[in-house]
Every structure is written in C-alpha cells, then in structure tokens.
Image: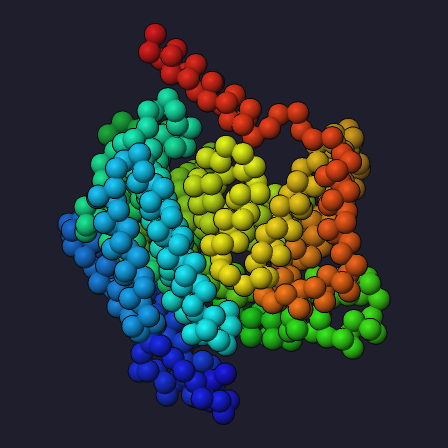
Length: 495
C-alpha cells in the first residue's frame, strides 16, 4: 500500500511528511493523521493555558478553534475536505432558512443524504479499503453534529417544554447559533478528525468558560460560603488516557498484526479446525481488532481534556471526572455481561447520538430503526448491514432472555456469579459473531464465515424471539409513562 513497500501510494492531503512516511514505512495518510493529532494535543494545552476564558474572549477562542480545525482537515484530506465544508455550510443555510417545524427533518435528510453519496463514491475513489484515513470519517462526525444541533434547536424553539423528556429539556436550544458559533462547533480542531460529537450547549459553555460551573450545578454541587467554583486540572485524566493510548498503540503494532482477520475465512483453516476452535479464534481476532479504536478514541478524548473540555462532574468522594466526551469504557466492554452493556460502552457518543435523534423519537420499532440508521451512517459496505441487522435480533433475543430468566439467578451469590460468568461468555462470543462482518466488509467472506459457524447465533436468536414471551410494556408505553410522570411533576410545581 505504501510507497515504502514498493507500491505507488496515492494521497489526497499534504505531502510535507512524505520523507517520514517512507522512513517509517507507514502510509502517508496515517502519518498526516498522527502528526495532526500530535499538534492538536500541543495546541490544546496552549489553548487551555494561554487562550483560557480569563485571557481571551469567546470570539478569539472560536476563531482559533475554527482556523486550526480547517487547517487540519486540509492538511489531511486536501481538496476532498471541501465535502466537509460544503455540508457544514449547506446545513447552516437550512438552519437559518427552514421553518422551525421542519428544521430537524431537512437537516437530517440533507446531512445523511450527502454522507451516503460520499460513502458510495469513496468506494471508487479510495478503492484500497476502509483502513485508509479519508474524508468520510470527519464527514460522519459532522453529520452527527449537524443533526444533533438541528433536533435540539427544534426542541428549544418549536416544541413545548411539557412535550419533551427531561434530557431533551436540558439540551434544548432557545436561540439559533451565530455563524461563528456554528462553525466553531462543527469544525473545531479538537474534534474535526475523530470527534467525538458533543452537545452544542456543552461546547459553548466550554468556550465561554462556564463548562465546569454548569456541570457542578447539574449534580447540585455548590460552593460553600464565599468559596468560588473550583478550576479542576485535567492533567490526571490526560496522563491516565496517555497510558491507554501508548498501550493500545503497542498492542496494535504487535497483537493486531499477528492475527489478521482474513485468516478466519481461510479455506484451509476452516477445513482443518473444529467448530469450537473456529469460534475461539474468532474471539481472538476480534480482540485484536480493538486496539486501533481504543487508540484513536482515547487520543481524541485526551486532546479535548488537555484543552479543558470534557469535565463531567464530581462524585460523592469529591473526585473530579473528565469522561463527558469519552467514547468507550474499556473495563465495562471487556467485562460486559449483556449485549446492551457492551453496546452501551462502545462508541458511546455515537450511541448517545443514535438514542437522541432516533431511538427516543421513533414512534414504532425503535430498536430496528436505530440499528438501521447506524448501518447507513457507517457506510454502504454490505458488512455493516450484516452486522447491524444481526444486532437487531441479538438485542431482542438478549432482552427476552434477561427478562425471562435473570430473576431465577438472583436469590444467592453462587447463582448470581454463575449467571454472570455464563452471560459474560455468551455476550463476548455473540458480539464477536455480530461484528465480524463489520471488519470483513464484503458479502462473500461474511457468508463464508457464518456458514463455517453454521449460522448458530442467527438460529438461536430467531428461536428465542419467537418462543419466549415479550415484555408486557412496549417502547411507546414506557415513553408515555415517563412523560405522564414529568407532566405530573410540572403541574405540582405550578400549583
């Protein structure tokens, strides 16, 4: 792939670091990405120390964030970055010209439509595959931000407070952002390359210096007497995440490269190994594919923290937390005892986006629609659709199993421990089975893999969903019950 390996390499971004790419034997696009993230980390420290709200106005902070963000995009993706800027400006036009009742619909259709067209075209432009760093990644993050902001503006201006959930009320935006604020939110250097997507209110509070105070008030923390709100340092969180980044990078360079995913569909491997061996190797291969995600997401989180963004509050012991923008909880992922727990701790900001724009608002079949939206957002490779459609049935089956059997194992500690061990094993294997097509991408290797595993998880899920009784209360009833309770609280306060 790289020129250093003897194959002509085609890049869309800057060629300034081409000598370094040849020296390291790493594709230039990955070198550019790593260089921008390293510069972004240094710029984040400088941003917190010398452009803090105490030293610079919010306008200056916005402008700095935009200029560096645009530079990073152009440096990494060259003229292809025009797609990012085009979508942002199109969406700003919709934000200001569309009627409030339709602002979220138009923004969603345009953003997802533009993203899908780009996903389809990049298969022909970047024919060398998904592992190459290209403009679709930032475009996916921008799509999240555009739709998040549009829905929150619609909630704040176009809907009544009593029609919103508690979370929607907290995040609703009453005044449309200015062009400077909009561009800063969409294109800031902290999240332009990898994200994560954050809420507009949180980002503006960070720029204006109200971020920590706002989060402390949300957990009912108030200064005593004449004390001021504290200014907690993020250095502890930054150093902790730096360790995770370095370990993940080491694992990627050793463990990941030792277990290529192509081996699980190798004909000789399938013919010469037993079913349990194939299942066990699938687990190892899927584990080996994780470090690159751990590396990229933790590094992005660390950059935001270094700039002073990402404070989430204080616990009962008085410890400050910097996980507002965290995209994963590695401990909960590796120890997950349910499909829901695993999914809820993986790519957490995308999960939150899916919940806010789809799951919480879907009148029917919220689980299916949310998984389908996730597939479309990820791209047009068939593997994504295999993964997320399988995920629908996995989720429904896991819910049915948990609601029908879990209460039998909570009466004693030994029973509870045995249940946890069994559900951990089943969860880890079922997730590997589900996400394998996400890595394989194409139809042929996916079918080959599932055939070698006898489609056993698909069959089990169908049987469980068809045979076991469902929960008595559906999504719509749960939402109505929550809304009735909220309306009752509002009425009591008014009285």
